[in-house]
Amino acid sequence: MIARLHPYRDLVTLSAPIAGIQFAQVALTSTDLLMMGFLGVSAVAAGGLAMLLYNQLRTMCVGMVTGVGNLVAAAVGRGEKRTGVKEPDETARAEVRGLLRASLLVATLAAVVAAAVLALASLLLPVLGQAPEVAAQAQGIMLTLAPGLLPMLWLNVLRQFAVGMRRAGSLLRVTVISIAVNALLNAVFIYGWLGLPPLGLAGVGLSTTLVQLWTCLVYLRTVGRDPLLGPLLTLDAWRADWGIVKTITGLGTPIALTYGSEAAITSIATLFMGGFGAVALAASNIVNQLAYIVYQVNIGLSQGSSILVSRAIGKGRTHEVADIARRAMTIGLSIMTAVGLLYAVLPSVVLRPFLGAQADPAVVATATTLLWFAIAHQYFKGSQNICVGLLRGLGNTKAGLTNTLIGYWLIGVPAMALCAHPLGLGGLGVWFGLCLGFGVTSLLLWRRFLSDLGRLTGASSALNAPNTTPISKEAR
Image 1: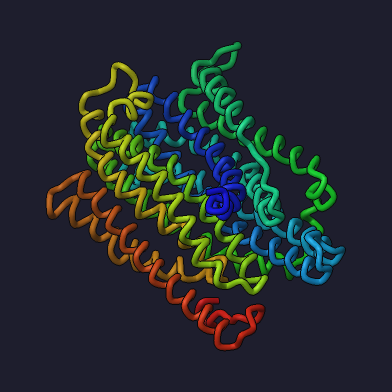
Image 2 (image 1 turned 120 degrees about the vertical axis):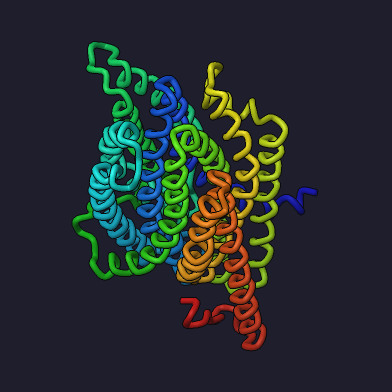
């Protein structure tokens, strides 16, 4: 039994800290949504819409630096190959420092642009068909959320650096503390405690931004104290090599567009739901947040398996790639099934924290129905994200973008519009189209992964030279 569990332990050891940091981010928005419930249905609708748009930009920014972990792992692997020991040589150390500088610069520029876009989007909500009351409340929280993109993205750079070195560490204690601190600050800023002016929904965004900054500083301290990571840590992004910046940008742009496409279809679904009123939008926001929580496990598995695949290929062990994929899917499907059963058996228990004891019956009824779509949603979206990570480990960062364009924009969005209005299914039609888009994309990605894997292992067998296994020009 121990021998069987050992391969899973390697994946879990690498993926769990990544998922933990993701949960730290989601804990903030989940706490925010809970606090919004005290301000009424319109606040949940407006705040949920604002956070969804924020998460879309946040996800795209994260995509810009996601490939840094693979680049760091490759640099360290080359160093280990040169020395024959499991420690990077001085050449690898210099390369890692260069990657860290460049990724911090990329992160800073991306976050500044995203913050400006979020601020502009807050002014355009009425044009996008949102009710005046919802648009007015959403604007305040979007403006206070925008600055938090900077520390959030710096945190993700540090995470990729640590993951690439296979020393991601744990943020469990910080996560728990941040939830409590965020809830307290929400109350302080919303209601104007301690002599401060009451900010309402805008206070929710301000507290989230402050907690993002605090979490980044805590993780920076953790990395700095690590005996392996500390000597490699460098924050002088202004000294970045522009050649490395170009490499990171070239690798990250397809990933960012893939992540952005994925987030965009959810944002479009939310805008569709907003057209059916505050009740439908509030219910959809709550269910989407629940699905988003579970999704973080699959993000951890995606990035953890991606690093392991890169490492396996670097060592010429291409036969291990299929096993890594199988283990990642086994863990992901097991967790999603357990959560899906909870949604199906105890919907009122799952929804109560977001709606409170005096919940609007219409919101409860709508959200309970949407939970069934959330079960399918998490399977499709979760499995496709794991596959995107596996493909990235193979060196293919473009397949995700190509296939999401097909699954989301040629199938998913048209299906949402068709089912919601001409077919008269309303909000249920929106979620059906959303699930259909994710389902088709997942199938396309897995087909591509199996094709790339077959080509990789076939070339390895034919050449009998694992260290020179080529990936097709198209895959690159």
